[in-house]
Amino acid sequence: MFIVRLLLLKSLIAFILVNANVVGLEWTQYHNLDEIYEWLSELERKFSPLVTVYTIGYSYENRPIKAIKISSRPGNQAIFMESNIHAIEWISSAASTCFVNKLLHSDDKTLQDLLLRYDWFLVPVMNPDGFTYTHEINRWWRKNRKPTGFSNETGPCYGTDLNRNFNYEWKRSGFPLNDPCDHWYHGSGPDTEPEVLALQNFINQFEDDYIRLYLAMHAYGNFVLLPYGHTSEVFPPNYDQMMRIAQGFADAAAIRYNTTFQCGASGLLNYSGYVSGDAKDWIYGVKNVPFAATIELRDNGRYGFLLPADQIAEVCTELTDGMLEKNENKLILAATRKGVKPNSRDNPKCQYRTEYQPRWRSQVFILRYSNEKLIEASKA
Image (tube, rainbow, N blue to C red; front, side, top):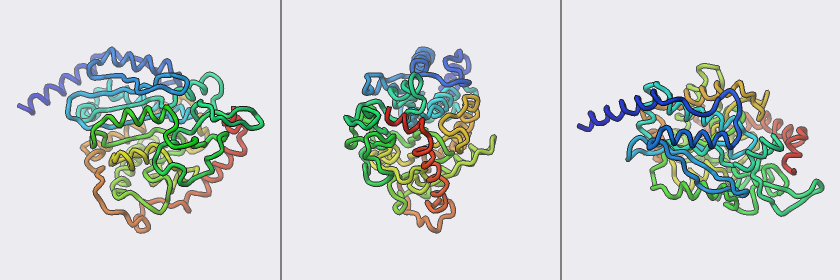
């Protein structure tokens, strides 16, 4: 009887998704906050009760922070995605919304199986104030828009890097982040920003073990970054397992366009060096979600943060291919916290700071000291 009911449910979902009118955004251009939120509302109208839209909190400037949940049946475990926590990284929300659109509209049996097996969450724009600021005033803005209370020679300084503000190893290590006018400013303390608190409060309501996978979508560099960000000496107990999953994503994402993703702990690979207080480490270290990763999407630096819109479709395809590789429970069941702390020096898949630090340090130098637009944006 259970098998019959399951087959009927799968058939019903397939019928609804294939016969629903395709709604919403065009992934041939970047969209602003209002357009993304209207698309969420339209999905809820078209696909209720499969789709539910939540307001999980409000930004400093009182903009809603919205999330979409897709759930086909009770009892599923969840996959959670968030994007545009950094305002400048438009491709992150473009790719994540495109993936959700494929998940809902595709007649691909593998995608439909993913839709059936798991609950899906997406917060498309974690930083609505900064995101709006990049569309209306300064394309190079990164942080939120909360005043820091400090000034420099250019005037008042605004904004905290939300992905440095989570209360896990906050202020432990990394680039000097205590300058309130720097575009990597970590805030006056951990969990001080309303956008960070909104996400945490939303996730805290769920039972333990409900969220099994967390993906933070970012740009740029083509990386799958794993915990931890604050060190290159200590690794999670299931690091080997996470590396196998991350490598599977990277291998699948590379097939169509030959885009190479590097995999490893962000403390080894991140272009800005050590990162303390980021979302994925909080999710893994505090909420005990067994697989948490930051996906740094295209490109390798030719366009950087200003990736042309004509690449959105290909980036979306790479993301989708990477997710599909992990069907048949690779993504969830393999992501267990049980395991042996890896001897990373003997693991050929592990990446080391000494191999990548010079290239990325040079790009950080360019970003911080040579690009006047980005520097001025951090102080505007």
